[in-house]
Image (tube, rainbow, N blue to C red; front, side, top):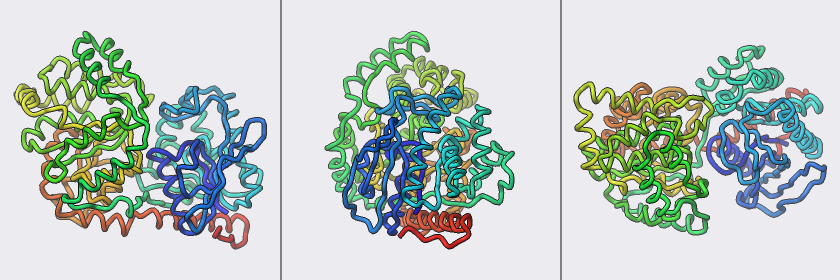
Amino acid sequence: MLCIIHGYLLEGSGSNLWTRCVVESLCMEGHTVQLVCQEPYPEIYDCIAEAYRYHLDGTVETMLSRAVPYPGKCIMHKPQLGDTLPVYVWDKYDEYPNVVPMVELDDDAIESYVETNVRVLRQVVQRHGVHAMHVNHAVLMSVVAQRVSAETGVPYAIMEHGSGLEYACKPDVRLRRMATSAFTDAGHLFVHGEEMRHRIETVLPDVPDLNAKFSVLPLGVHTAQFEPVPRERRREKMGRLFVELSELPRGRRPEQLVAMLDDARRAGDGERLRNVLSSVKYETKAPDADLEEKLQQVDWEHDAILLFVGRLISAKGIQSGLAALPLLLAEDAGIRLIVVGHGPLREPMEAFLWALEHGDRELVMRIVESGRMLEGDPDGAGGSQALGKVKWFYHDLAARGELDRYFELAQEHVRGERVIFTGYLTHHELQHLFPCCDAGIFPSIVKEAGPLVFLEALASGCFPLGTYFGGMKASIDAIADLFPPEIAAAMKIDPLDTVADIVSNVSLALRFGVRYKDVLSRTAQSRYDWTSVGRKLAHELDALGSTRHGSTAVASK
């Protein structure tokens, strides 16, 4: 019996998506999986057969019990934590009024969180005959698995997804010590690839015999969901998206955007501008109220569709894509950019776009100079530096005497309707949108450990462009030999010159990428389907359990 331990939700991207997809693939293969997580709506996920809530007073409440359409099943266990949820990067969680970056928690709060989870995991392991545990992230749930393993003898593996190292272990010596201890006692350390392996070696150098514990477990994608569609069927595919959207609660209303832009153009300085942009209140984890109306304006058969998917923070690089637009549109007026995601940089970037369109150069530069201050420092890095890549791009244009022409092209070609901000979408919706797009741009300015959006673009036949470092570099290099050198080069966005590279590479991607849709899709099917990832995880955890106990583990079929 396998147990997967994840401290957060199943909805969303990153490690949430990884957990959901791996559990689904294991259930498809006939496994019974015990899952410890914080998902409040288990009924949404059809692989979850049973779900239980563990209250602080020791009582256990049944949340769900039903049959599932899989050979196997997932049994979910949700520890109740009280008001506080420790996180890496602040985000909104409806169930928790006190969401706190774990670096800001005192020792007592950390210990309370760990012990609350230990009490639940101990019960799960003992009652369900768990023979091996898999835990996500360097801290804090790794410490939970470590303590339960010490009590029960059940071994555990850890998979770091990136945030635990970057936003917890690096800045906080307490958490770094905890991670070092948990990694020391772990039987296995799964990594997406060499980038994550290098990060672990750098941040946690004191783990004994570290290299002997690593095992590569690649990222995956549900290739059956993300299938390419020809242009003539894109409207039909969008119709399926509209069906998915019809039952969803909605976020920002169009009149809120109008009011915000009106206030933003009158804001005098950076601090006033920040107050204006941060005062727009709505449910951020929901699609926009008028999303269908905006998407219906697209000529899906003829427009060249670019897609950005990610949290709207400067680290993900959406600012580089928008800064490239005046030059892209001057070359091809049929380009549309669809921006999927939520985050504190959304309103600043919409104001930036409005300023480009209306020739308000002063507002453009105020936004660029204000930078991170406008998004409230969401990644905890500190400071209020400018949007550096955009600022450098403008500086370079000015040095060549081309900045005035840039703003003239912006006013001539940029139109609000050419860029569609969708609000928050899950993969239930993205599986219909991705295949209707021609190219995906993922211009992160920080190294991604393992960008799942790259694989979803591959499976959809959507030509991917990403910043050529970290996990994105590894992903591009892994498939580069399938294409002519100039086509493979178009996938690579220079980390030092992201805006200029988007301008030059998008044109090539749109012109030639369509010829390789089938190659992209077939590559995803053969190398990255979640089923193969789940099989490898189960095999290695079974082997870990049998090694520790000195006997052959029985697979949980």
